[in-house]
Length: 423
Image 1 (cartoon, rainbow, N blue to C red):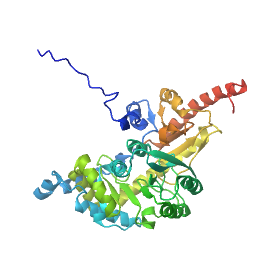
Image 2: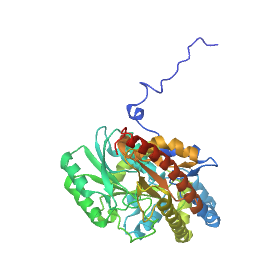
Image 3: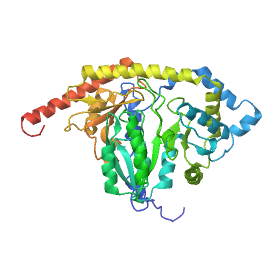
Image 4: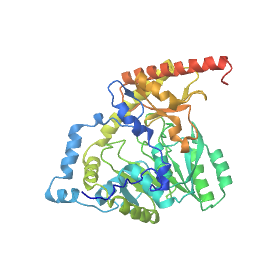
């Protein structure tokens, strides 16, 4: 036996990179184990209902991806860092449908849009650089950006999206062409977590401000095709070719096939490719081949319409249940598409501390502070999802959650009447 002492590697102290020490775990991921309990109705995840996908269509796309020896040798092999040319061409067709014209050489395929966020953060962010986001914003973006230690400024929103007046005030404080100001990240369609859509005049004003103050716009559009009401909103990318556009098949096909994309000018993509080579060399050729054949060979629009009809019914069930069961002190958004509703409670309610009571009652949600940098706001808010559960389960979950909230509010009312808490 060796006399060499066993050395424990320090994974909690000085050996760990500074950027990792302050990162927070995703609350949605943390809730996954709880959400799988049979007694829990989950309103926390952002999962599309893949049970709606026709098995025969999936089988056909998979069979086509490996139909012959040549196809198998490509699908099972390493691929180009920017992705299979055939799949990138399919992506340009999907983009053309929504008014974005791009060539395959302006597309890089990624392992979902989440990898795209990490790659862009790696390319653009140095410690203490300034990043602008909506407030609240997608928590996965906050995770990806925070690893590179930026100073994230969250710009408040209303029912028409990010407030341009407040953005302009913040930009004046930062200054024009400030080298520390790198980019603004936005989800203009059915935003995660709020569900709101940026108004057309604000989209145009955002483009103007980006040129005036010298920052890049990153447009994340995972939900744009999941529209229930209202007219089509033109993407920022269609208004300005300098916008970096992110997309994914996760909400309109299968999130398990990790295929997303970045559409950007070549001078941006050349740096992204360097970052991607260091991350994973290339994406899954098999996944990309399946995606190619699904969107080339299958009437996928029929399934998309099935998603839209089903999610509309579930959104309506959630809105009706909120109106019936939630207390008058609560307010919520009314999304015209997407997967989420944002609920706001009185300022003295902490939805983070209330989560344990909700789990006990058999329902989950995501506390609102998860969607702000450093948890700096949103403690009295929550994100709830309507895409996965049935209308009956949604109604039951909202009633359970309303009972939890009412118990909290009753306790606070006692404190208020006793003078121990301000209204």
